[in-house]
Length: 338
Image 1: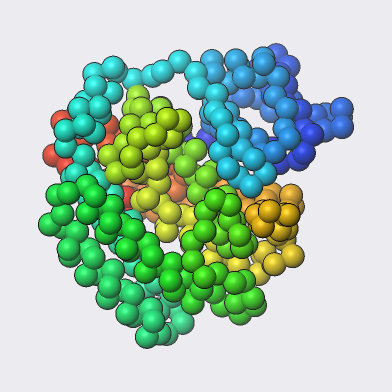
Image 2 (image 1 turned 90 degrees about the vertical axis):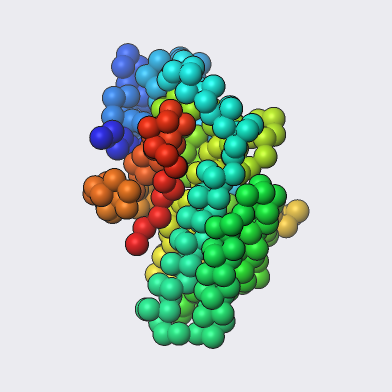
């Protein structure tokens, strides 16, 4: 099993990342604040005004370290990619499947996503008692799951996914407890996020999506050719496909934990002139620390029957998808927890 490596998050504006021999050095205001060996680092995430030397870019490419750049909002900008790994025959199988028969994989991914959304609502019911609104949406999600089983049209599969997401987020505010109810959430708003909860969701989705893209590249798949999401220039459609399996389990639950434990408050966000909401620097650092801690927790993988670290889930699902495309598995087994 692949070892979970550390991720380095550089959040301080004006930081400079450069190379000294076989180590990475971070300078802030021309003062060295950290020096780390590249061995053991799997990914580097740079947010906002962070400068990286060309030597570091080449160093990361040579050592298969994922180096990615984001805005301060967490919107993905670019990624340094080293030599393509994997067998070209695997990617040919991926392209054929995407062109000729994407429905089964897309349907399994959407079913897993809806199942995990339902579990988030059921978890609230178990911990805080039944609520009519939650019960109604859980029933609706069960109905969508039953209908989805018969879907063979890709547009219908996407339609069921959209309907389930709308129902799930229509009661998301009911999952907030205590002072977290001060956060106003009326639905999913993406570009740009116009409230703190949407800002948090978008930020974590973006970071998680980049982890998934790196995992797909690591097993030799093309992250831009997916089965559920339509292809667009510059869009990692396959990474977005697999992200659907992890949104509720990793990102949404992390957001709810941060808010319900009062680790974040409304004062940790700032609204810019155009109405976009973003995390303040210290709050962004806290979110990344908690995200990293979440990745180090272990769960039993339903399909493999093994205890694995959550941070390895993108790699495991990428590996299982590759096995399906090679013909080793009759179906792609999406991630879901019991």
